[in-house]
Image (spheres, rainbow, N blue to C red):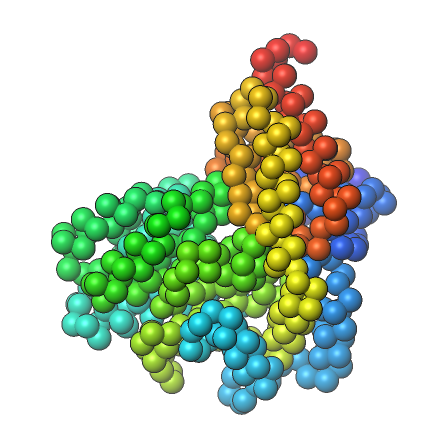
Length: 404
Ligand SMILES: *Cc1c(COP(=O)(O)O)cnc(C)c1O
């Protein structure tokens, strides 16, 4: 098993600290490893498999499309891309879509839109306001936008044109309005995912919206993790009753088939013109069929309402069970994006959970992050609460009695 793992990974660049497990198949919220061991997947391939694994609707769409037409390129019309753009823009209240293959690419498109927007307004060196602890991806522009020095280290010179302020601090953004005439846009996550499931105060996005309107800045929301029902609405911004100018999505859009989109409206829709941006694979028939099957299933099975309701249940169960457990600092969440923050690094819990047949994640060192699939059943949800609370309780006890 160990030898096998080493054999398997030696020819892969060591960019990931992988857990010692390899999965062979999945069904709904369950995964099976290559020893036949079963796991409850409470991370969904990092917010990707919202419909769970091996969903019949996605499989049917993919099999049909693979047997018909997978790819032709954007040299030609693509009917399913048109249909998907219509669905997504209607859902967002925006006007059009650019399709790509990942979250980082969706954000690259947004950054390019912001730069063109700035130049159009006569700004020679346009800047984008970004946040501390943010995550926008790993390409050079998006890692430069990302507010995490670990992700940037060694890749200097970074891409210029980003101005950073603390998250959920509207005053900091306001003061830039008077200090910096180069601002063209704000790029922000409605809830910070990698940053530790940070939920801003309810008036943060509405206030950002007003500031952007007043100064002619684009409000660009990175919904790569929060979108497609994850936070209990189709887009997390719908909790705040605003509409952004640009919105990026990816992760859950294809339930595992790589696809990303940059949606735009309110003047931002006309900025990218022929020849200014492109992608070979972006929005190909296979990926768009997968995404359409995801949207159909979310709607038919009212899974977003389910995510909101299940999220409430999970949050109150965790609060009830963990309220008085030492070292548990905060339990927060929206929909099926849940963070349990401890007062100490808790990466070891990921390994302990794995041993117990549960897949979780720890982000920002101290925050246990849960991103279970939207199809999680009540019994599975209860099992998740029981298993995780037990693990956290014993983790907390060992911290206080390290020799036991
Ligand atoms: C995951 C993520 C990205 C990057 O997406 P990739 O598909 O990995 O490129 C960007 N922004 C946010 C908020 C994310 O969670």
